[in-house]
Every structure is written in C-alpha cells, then in structure tokens.
Image (tube, rainbow, N blue to C red; front, side):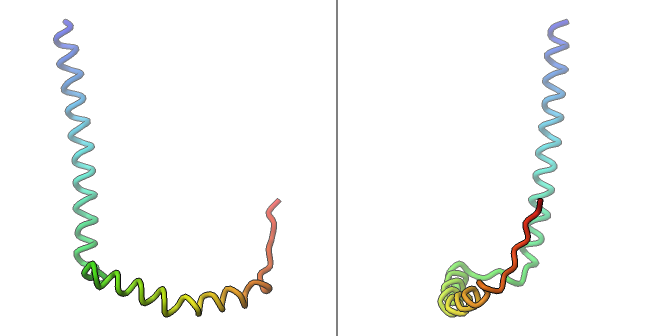
Length: 79
C-alpha cells in the first residue's frame, strides 16, 4: 500500500512540474517573439552610446524644467 502512495505522489509531482515548465516555456517563447519583432533592438555598444548621448544632451534641459516647475506644483493630501 505504501508503494502505491509513493508512486501516486511521485506521479502527481511530475505532472505539476511538467505543467510549470510548460507555462514557463510558453511565456519565454512569447517574450522572445516580442523581442525579435521589436524595432528598438540595437547592438550593445550602440545602445550604450545612445544612453550616454541622451544623458549628456538632455540632462541640462530636464534640470531646467525641474527647477522651473518646483514652485508650480500643488500638493493634495489624501485623508
């Protein structure tokens, strides 16, 4: 009787493991398909160059916008 119980538990565990692996694989395939169709994908060094250029070119503009908007914010407190 104990052998049947252990075999049943083992089979249930393997089925559940199979379900989890199938869900993970299907999600992975969906994400890789989205990434493959993405037009924003570039090479590693091109991405690094773009990030650095955007940081240095637009950092001073964002700072001015933040400084000019400090006094214009109205805060509402939720009670």
